[in-house]
Image (cartoon, rainbow, N blue to C red):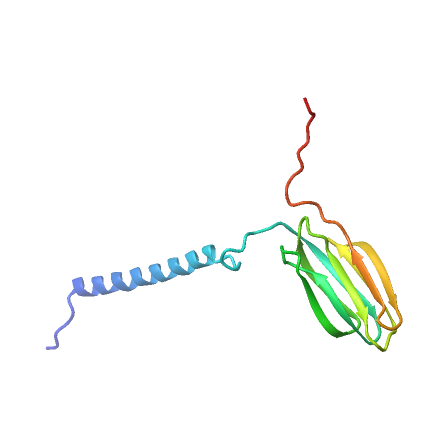
Length: 149
């Protein structure tokens, strides 16, 4: 007659498997809660959705303000037109898109929309023509109101 496991050993094995599964699920949930997707040390800054658009024909160098709190622009060289990009710009930083046409010249227009609302349009013409669209975003810090006493 083959030896059979005792009920006590089967219960302990089942309990161990259940504990491991619960711990694994708990770890996944904890990872999902703690993993914010931000880079370590990168503070969360309130931002506004800004859509930049450049229309025209040919190519242009395009510089635009994005997520950088330091105010550094992203520059894309010899971009085929038309071009459109939506980015988040920190409050208090001016959203900005600047276009520069090449030696071939031509015509191109930039436009800027903040939170879906059109703000500005500008056009560039001719050899190395330039245009800039810029807007203001409110400050990230609330303004103090009150009377001086």
